[in-house]
Length: 136
Image 1 (cartoon, rainbow, N blue to C red):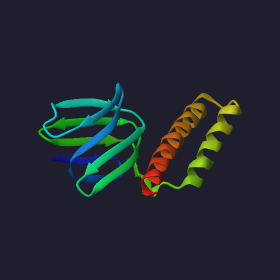
Image 2: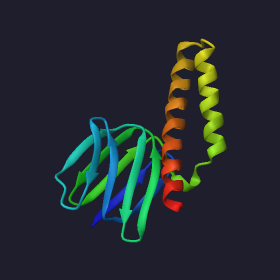
Image 3: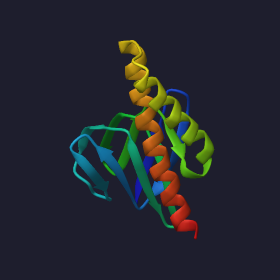
């Protein structure tokens, strides 16, 4: 087993023993299993899949870092939201607002914020759809 901590600037989102964790690394998807080699790597916006003996959890995360050392995995990210906390209508509204801002030719700072919002809504929708698929 691994001990996994997922930490955002606001709180510790997850802290428990897990069988494995799959994360979106800057160089591709990585699965961390017990006895994994020591690792420090950058993470990008995407989906985290946590396998536990009681089931599987999915989270949408923002960018950050992962450290693996002695069967302890620490994930530091800008945001981490469980699939069951995501609301489809809110995601759709955020995506539409981002698309509108990008079409209107906003300032550089607003364009970057709109791109981040668009990427976040895309990731959130992927995680939400995966959860719905597993419920059915």
